[in-house]
Image (cartoon, one colour):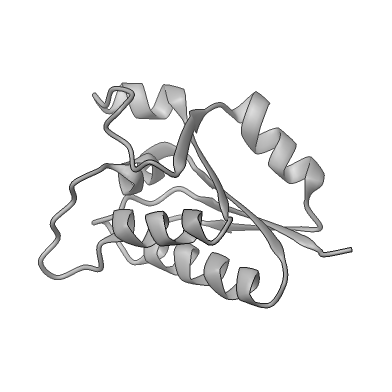
Length: 119
């Protein structure tokens, strides 16, 4: 039975490289046979914004789309998303707008390991 990893990231896509590192870690774990869940919380929800066009940072939204196509389960905190002025439909297609209680807690309960990336 494959082990499961949950990655919680709380840093925005343009604040630091944490969101990018979260995606790279998730994809590497998936390639090694892990089941992988990702959850964006706080400023981390900005990483799933559709249409990002960074000049000096990797496009985390595009990277999350690739991760989703590889079968990496992704969700973000709906409260955090709304608090930053985002509306449903502005997120990349692979990211579910969810909640701490319905998604993060389920991810953690299903996991063998939890990694948190935050500033």
